[in-house]
Image 1 (cartoon, rainbow, N blue to C red):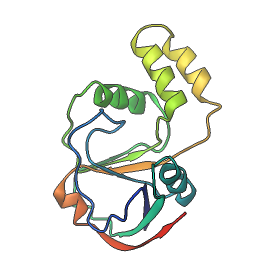
Image 2 (cartoon, rainbow, N blue to C red):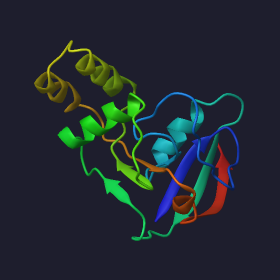
Image 3 (spheres, rainbow, N blue to C red):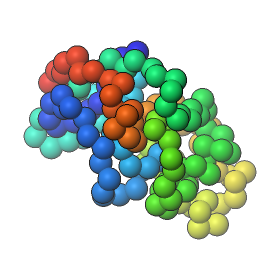
Length: 150
């Protein structure tokens, strides 16, 4: 399986990031299977705009969770991760809460909108994808194939 990562630099050896803002699926190194999405990530970076390409050899011995769609379990998982709760998965995969969706998540957390209202608002959003490698064991499943500049 091909994975992509948009950046401002070539990343031959991805590393687990464990600082900064809390992300959708917690700390780790984020990829996507959608090349166009990686290009969008790269173009937001200052200076250079690089798309890195990796081959992913799925190992079923790792602890994984996959969300095939935005659903109640996905929403609760993202809310927990964004609040800083840690999970014990090696790899987490599923839809991405972009800035607009995240605003809806924040409104839901603050009780400004109901769950029902949240689902009504996000059903019109373009589907996205992310897969985060949360452990060193997970990162051993990928190999760098190359990169290109936008």
